Length: 314
Image (cartoon, rainbow, N blue to C red; front, side):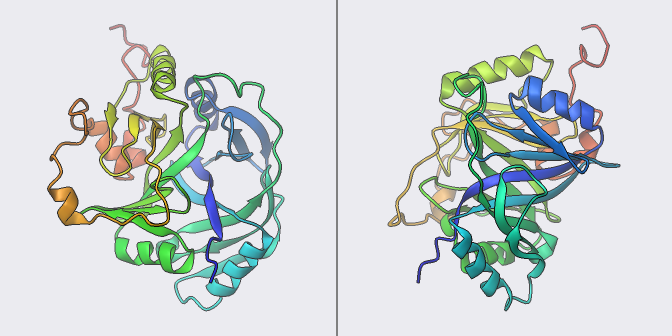
């Protein structure tokens, strides 16, 4: 049976406390381009990848809303719809059809999975080349997302058994799932409730991470964790906290795996050097990053600017 319905991660949707402030961060500091606005939402794109990588809307507080997974084709959307119809932990919110609520979505559906996780599965429409596509300081694409879950095994089983993703690795705290050659597209972490742990944006290389990091420093943001190299996935990372307290990552050099890749489990990773970076360079994440990764975005609202940005002279 062909279960390659999902080919990648297209976008995430967030509710933010100050839409103008978040727009400024993601365009001027993070390096995305705003590509549209409709029904109170603003849409942002990377230099390559899906037509939309990030969707923001004004809310009363910071809140993670949904992820959009890219479907192989319309037949894949229909196949998943049929599978979901028999799933007691899934609820169809919009049956397969044309999606017009966001630029770049063609044919797709919307459903709610375990623990209230809202997922859009859509076939991406063709996207025009970006004017800044050759700028090495800008993210290429939204490459993976990590979600916190109070019942990680349930959510992991849903992604693998129902949506067709494959387990790459499992530690004592996380599952890493893939739908292609990248080691992981979705990862799951033990948490108190369903929330966004972080969203990761791919950069061309380590130089590009450093240039992008420099731009963020110029805008008054600080590196909350990094530069380092992860264990599972072997990817290079540099983490920041956005104005609403969401954790965002620049990453590159994700491990490429084939269909014959054998997962490693907790016993393997427990024997790995017990430090948060293969290189031993990046030590523990900052307290602010730990709160952000725990999903408590609203607790970080007043804590993510340097003294200079807060209007206090250093």
